[in-house]
Image (cartoon, rainbow, N blue to C red):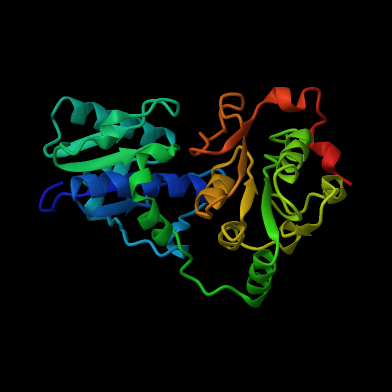
Amino acid sequence: MPHQSRRVIARVYGGLGNQMFMYAAGYALARRMQLPLTIDARTGFRGDPYQRGFDLGNFSITARQAGTDDLGYFRGISSGGCGRFWRKAVRAAARMGVLPNTTFLVEKSPRILDQRMFAADAQGNVYVDGYWQDERYFIEYAEELRAEFLSAKTPGPGSVAIAEDMARHQAVAVHVRTMLPKPSLPIDYYLESVRHLCERLEGIKVYFFADNPDHEFDLSRFNVPVANIAALKLSSCEDLSLMTQCKHHVIANSSFSWWGAWLSGERGRLVVAPDWTEWPPHAVRPAAGWTQLGRESFAGSEQLQSLSA
């Protein structure tokens, strides 16, 4: 990439939770290398099957988006067949040293910590491409990232009222990921998680979030007071912002609710997560200190459809 100062370029794609992991890992690498961070928000959404787009602009992020000239060799990368071929070609050329002043870091495995992301000696511009769904990639910059991911938009009156209600209660965010048409987790995972919290906390109130607000849920099965936030059909950024207002969390095997719990930063918080080794390929490694529930905790459980009315 001629005529440019060195930088870290983080490629982002997928849903909001995935984009946040990619940004956080790139941010941390840029801080270690003392280089500016630029976001490649161009190549990752070409041909996205769900027509998703760049959502990080709703936050207070400090990195700027890359222009065509910034991407240089990487501008031909996309999610389609030709883009994947170009990505492999660029990666091979960078490995052989054919591309001057360029380091191309592609995640090798989502379950193995990539030590290259902790090195500060990469040469030239550094382009990072992967999910990086592990807080160890960025935990030392946790407070900075919580500031980066503050909402840049003024909350509406409805969200303000919900946040005020959360502050008055032992608020527990419960997030269900349905992964239509097949559910993601059995209902007994959620029921057992709430029971787990009830044994340790007094007077909890569940604030229910779901990625499919049109699905009907029988929330009375939780046997605690419930506020159905999913029924309000707020934006994903509004949902995430409200999740962070809760003191405790029951997350799905979802990067979205992972961030809702992680960003809350609540001292003394309790977070229940599915055992990430049992739910590939969608599970995210829980953060340090979170409780993991394995299948043995709800053996023989009903499927999520049974939560339906």
